[in-house]
Image (cartoon, rainbow, N blue to C red; front, top):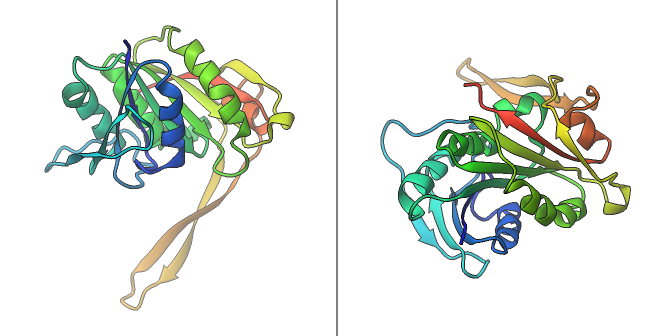
Length: 237
């Protein structure tokens, strides 16, 4: 039986993680090692100084062995592969992230960072993400189908499958677009609001707007137009 390790960056209680595990149990023995709380935008960071803790916790999907970890998503993959899953997993799934992992945002994403760590450990890996708002209808319609399809599709060195589900209704979805490239367009036009503190320091809070434009054939263009985007991404760090 295949062994599947699942992680995320939204935390072990996240709905997307539970939905992914519920689908994955159809394909093998599932282990979850996920952060104990929100860890978004930590990219591929790992804990080098000091230690972190993983504790066995109850999980709402029968048969799944779950651990909550105080480290980063990449830490979760490392201990899952090297210490927790007996004999190492055959596959790592990261997600289902609340928010797209497309275009330049991939470099910040801890969903992608955890997936890249798995690829570095030579484990076949799929990252799953969906819109942070809107319906889950498209995700729930296609996640099992794409999981089955991609689990046996080969990947290059340090490469992952990257799947993004649009937040439109199922009726509005145009289907699946495969072989999407990672867009070089900027998804968010970032800025910071400033607030001067009583001690003279300045507090900065990230702000910004989405940019709903992208080149043809890219992951960002696909989700903008209501398609499921399937493509590969490579860790170049």
